[in-house]
Length: 157
Image 1 (cartoon, one colour):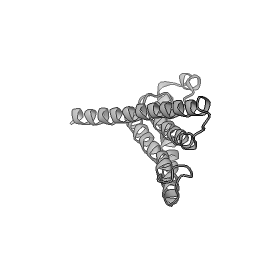
Image 2 (cartoon, rainbow, N blue to C red):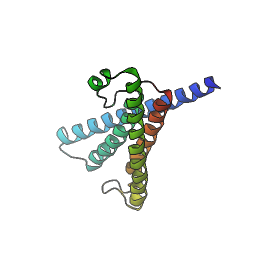
Image 3 (cartoon, rainbow, N blue to C red):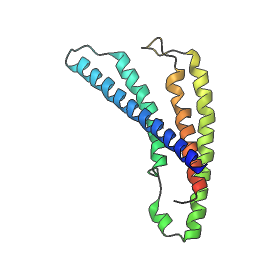
Image 4 (cartoon, helix red, strand yellow):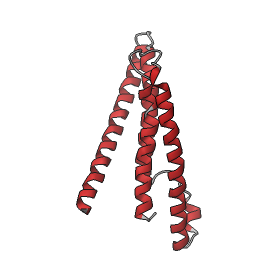
């Protein structure tokens, strides 16, 4: 049973990491295109600027989840190191519990925001519903909830 769970966690990690790498590649490619088309050909492209903005939103959300998984999010080491092992454990649970509730709130409002904007379309990419750039926020929050819950259950810092 534990092996199946570990394989699922590894599969989720591989998918999240691969998607983050894809987003990074696309952001670099679109930004490179934007710079070349603007400064070499003197013909700025509005769709590439907007696409880069949307990719950056998605990358920030996926990157935050990856950072949380690797325990590279905001953490005050100096304060934690001064606590006893028992108080450190209590602080860690409180930290992840607070983070969990914050992420659930952002997830809820992120879904509402994405659904609210689903009828609008991008100004420069007419076929792109604004749902797709906006849904990156709740997806990132859901991944962060998953990783925060995993760390809270694991119980170590």
